[in-house]
Amino acid sequence: MTDEKVLAKADAAVVWCEHATNHAKAHGGKRWAYLLIPHNQISEQMTLSGLEARYTYVAGMR
Image (cartoon, rainbow, N blue to C red):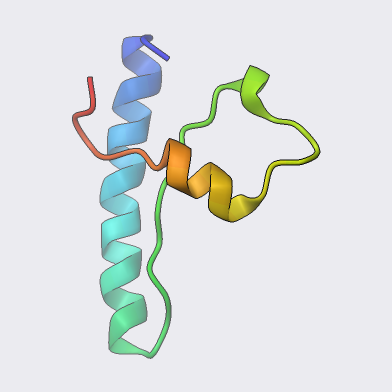
């Protein structure tokens, strides 16, 4: 999770999520968030809320 291309794409995805959240709020929708999850952290017992709590990416988290 240190590759510059991966982090640049994650930063762009966070901006997209901010725009999507603003649009959704204006139309009664929910917040969007970008999760950057390492492939070796996925397991059957994980929940989406648990993954969100641990792996929500904030732009510039370098």
